[in-house]
Length: 185
Image 1 (tube, rainbow, N blue to C red):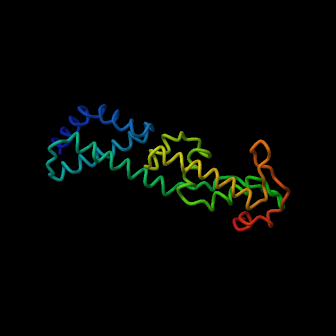
Image 2: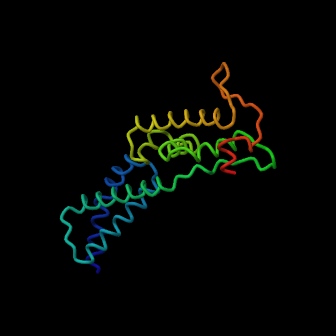
Image 3: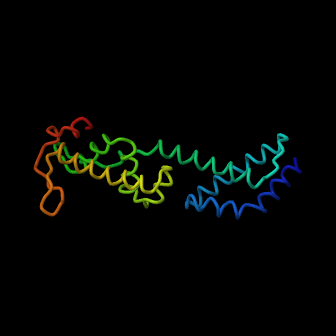
C-alpha cells in the first residue's frame, strides 16, 4: 500500500501543474479543475492499488480528467433551469417578469439554456458555449434566436408591440388574458 501511495505522490508532483494548466484552458473555474484532478488522481490510485498497470500515467490521468470534466458539463446542462425569474406577488398584478417566466418556460432547451447562461447568469458567450459543448457560432445563433423568440412571445402572449425605437411597449393587460402566462401561474 505504501508503494502505491509513493507512486501516486510521485506522479502527482510530476504532472499536476501541467495537467491543471491544460484543463484551465477548457474551463476557467479553478475550484472545479481542482476537484476534477483530485477525482482523477483518486481513480489513478485505486486502479494502481487493484494491480492495474498504467504505462503512460500522465496521459491516463489527463484522459480521465477530461472525461470527468465532460461528465460535469453534461450534468450541468441537464440542471439548467431559468425559472428563477421572480414574478409579481401582488394579487392581480401582472408585470413583464411574469410574462418572461412563461415565455422562457416555453422555449426549447437549446434556446432556454443559451438565454439562461448569458442573459440571466451573465456568463460570457465563449464560456457558455464551452459549457454546453457547442461551437461559439452555434451558441451565438441560439442566443440571438432565443432573444427573438422572447420578443415574439411578448408580442403574441401579452400584446406588446415594438415602438419606433425598436423597444417593446406594453399595452395594459390582466394576466388571465395572456395566452402563455396564464398557463404557468
